[in-house]
Image 1 (cartoon, helix red, strand yellow):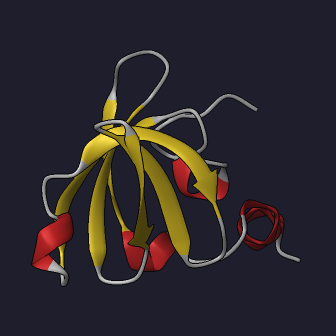
Image 2 (cartoon, rainbow, N blue to C red):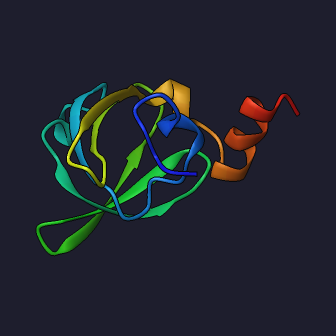
Length: 92
């Protein structure tokens, strides 16, 4: 299934560019880079030659999709492993 603005929250984020638009941890606001890892609560972003671990909760993230579309997502909506988020859309 192709990632679109409507279904992005149910997909894995690894490989997408991300920008941290807002976060309760002010030191993370403005971080921009490539998502290289994801766990239930953390996005690992390669930024400036280092991997920054960013909690999903209380963040606002702008992802750039493969077609260049930008999508802003509330971090609270993406807490969980990708496979668990997919179960939400499937009703499982």
